[in-house]
Image 1: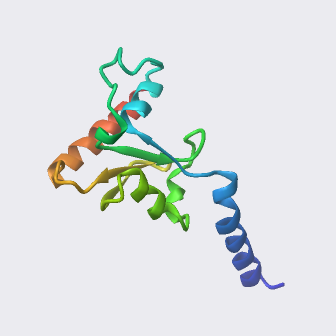
Image 2: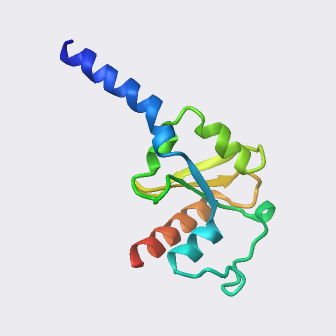
Amino acid sequence: MDLISGIQLMHEDAVKNAPEIRPIVIQGMAEVLAKSMGVEDLEMMGLNILPEQEQMFVASVPGNVHGAGVIAYEDFKDKASERVGDQSFFILPSSIHELLIIPDNGNFDLKGKRHVLSFFDTIRIVK
C-alpha cells in the first residue's frame, strides 16, 4: 500500500467510525451555559427555557472536546435540522470544541449573531 492509499484508507475509516465513537450531541444553549457554570437547576438561573422556545443550540461530542468536527458527519445537517424544528439554520463555528446552531426564524440578524458569538466565546474563555 502506498502513502496516498494509506491516507485515503485512514480518512474512510475516520468518516465511518467517528460518528459511532464520538456521536453528535446537540444541546440548548441554556443547558450548556448552566452546566459550564456548575448549576444543576436551570430555573434558579432563569434559564428554564422550554425546548420548543430555545433559540440557540450547541453541537459537539460527549465531553465537548474537539467536537466541532461533527460538521463533517454525514448526518450532521439532518440531526441539526431536526433539533431546530426542521427549519433552516445558521452554523457558527465557535471553537474547535463546538458549533453554534441558530434557527433561521427571523429572531436574529447578522449583527445579533456576531454579538452572540462574541458573548459565548467570552463565557467559555472565562470559565
